[in-house]
Image (cartoon, rainbow, N blue to C red; front, side, top):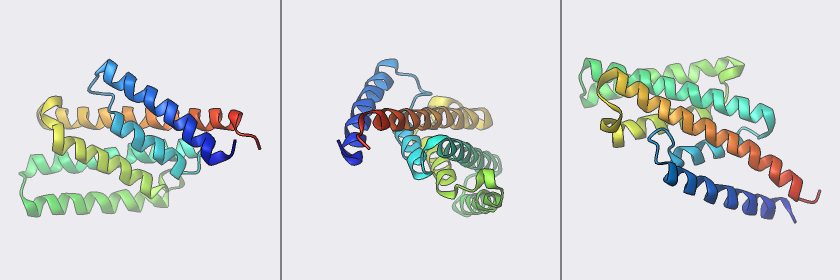
Amino acid sequence: MDLVTGLAVVIGIMGGIATWAAIAIGNPYLLIWAVFVGWGSFYHCGGKEAGFKNSAVANLWGAICAAGALIALTSIGVTAIMAGICVGISIIVLILAAKLPLLSAIPSAVYGYATTAALFLLGAAAYGEGAAGIVKVATAVVISLIIGNALGYASEKVTGAVVKT
């Protein structure tokens, strides 16, 4: 079996099981869509142990930056101009941090940022009000992204075992 076919089969089966599990568990801290973002982020960072570390840390960093921007924005007062300022400043910080090798996976940081912002915009009420609710949103995203990175790592190992090299 070639690599692409192996990846397709392994990730397809694992993705189906992960989706079933997320639905069956029904926990607001297990977001299947964010799991898949983390999974893709793992492969985007090159896989293996280094890819896992780089992806997971950058995902976390992005979620922290988004949470900071959201807390600032909701504390100041939500207007279009304030949203633009809070996002702009937080993105500057997010990207400047890439000067540190541990935070250099900018796209993966953006995945963490975007998934946190998306969940806040689409479902924040389910997590509570104010800064505490925003922290819960970021926590749900980070947990799901890390699970996705772990599934990426596992799928890479399983694929390596079934693909003839």
